[in-house]
Amino acid sequence: MSEKKDNFEQSMKRLEKIVEELDKGDFSLEDSLQKFEEGLKLGKTCREMLDKAESRVRKLVENEEGSLCEEETDEF
Amino acid sequence: MLFDDTQHLTVSEVNEQVRTLLEESFAEVCVLGEVSNFKSHSSGHWYFTLKDANSQLRSVCFRSDARRVGFDLEDGMQVLARGRLTVYEAYGQYQLVVSAIEEWGAGQLEAAFRALKERLEKDGLFDASHKRELPAYPFKIAVVTSPTGAAVRDIVSTLRRRWPAVDIVLCPVRVQGDQAAPEIVRALESLRDVAGIDLIIVGRGGGSLEDLWAFNQEIVARAIFDCPAPVISAVGHETDFTIADFVADARAATPTMAGEMAVPAADEVRAALQQTMGRLTHFVSSTLELHQRRLHALLASYALGRVRGRIENYMQAHDFAMENLKRRIGDVIRKRRGSVDEIVARLQGMDVKTILKRGYTLCSDARSGAMIRKVADAVRAGNLQVTFHDGHVLAEVKEKIHERKER
Image (cartoon, rainbow over all chains, first blue to last red; front, side, top):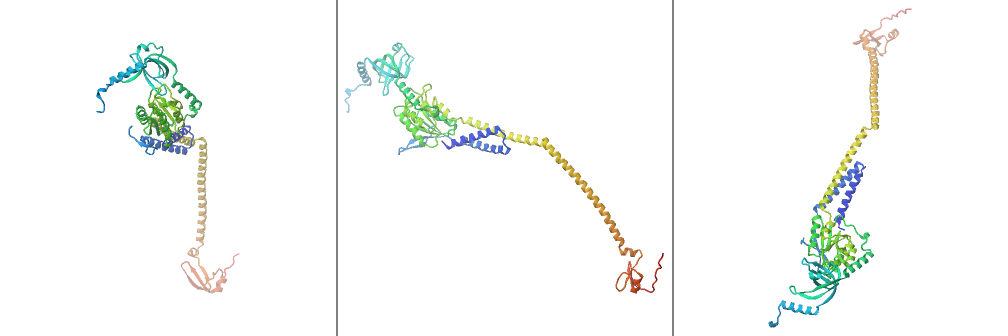
């Protein structure tokens, strides 16, 4: 599993959970604000991951020793 | 000169001689094989390939004969075809010109397919419990397919268009022919050593049953089953399933659909994120509002009102008491001050000088200074000091006159 995937997925899940919890309501003001702040941070992280990431295409090729390695390609 | 050019043949001559040989030797043959690449031309002629596990034979059935065949040919059909061999000289290809066809049960490939499917199913390779969920947000995807051809381009362009954050690892393999299956297996196995693969797409574009045969082989099925990451099979065939399709975690009908299935659309994710953030903000502002309302309600509540009323009463009582106290202390002070004045006045009245001013004098012994209060004292002293308010004089007693006591 890639770290990016885990981070993104966990952030999204946590964010959704926060909203769900807030939806059910009845938190103290302090707790709400704390969750709100956390949610803002998570949202920002997710958005940045989407905006900053740029797709790369690499080819798995066999090198001279017969083992496989990734090689950058711009065929696509 | 290497060759004797008087002995050369033209291409046409070679083909013609081969044709003659073939037609004489195979004037009538009966061939058992599986139909594939079947095409019914608009002219009414049928073109197809007969094949078995190892070999293929190009075949044609002309319209007049095709009409007499009592059924429609289909790919995968096992048939007995009667005819003659000839050479299609324009291409230099030899072919079977079929005059009659009989169906020969289910095709062997089909049978092999079914047998394998049954066996793998029994082994549990298709069980829903083994299906892994596709990751919602894959960031690294491996694509196992031919490096040339439309399939890889369709997959890569779809992935990048929808989900620009994706890293793609291409595993170039042959997808057709004897080497296809082992190469696919090797690629899938080598992906175990590539870190961070979230998802694998394995497939190719559409083709006939024998073109897709690699995806119907047991080693490929088991390699897919053993993959650590979820696998989407994308063998471009809308209707027919391959064994790979059954064993994979998800099946896409075409390579483009595999791309769509593999990744979410970034725009949609962004919109959802936006919406979630909107809800978050909404909840917090409504929580603030709620607490504000609660605070107001509490402040306005009867209970607190009563407490406040009592406090106000106390405060008022306190104020009254203080007022009272001040007033009373004032009175006391005023009274006290009056008596002090009196005393002072009286003291002042007792001041000797004031008395002397009124005309009294003070008489004392000129020597001892003792106060003279009686005639006898004065006689005893002899010399007196008489004090007036503005000084004193010395005096001498001349005569003693007793005041007659009055009755």
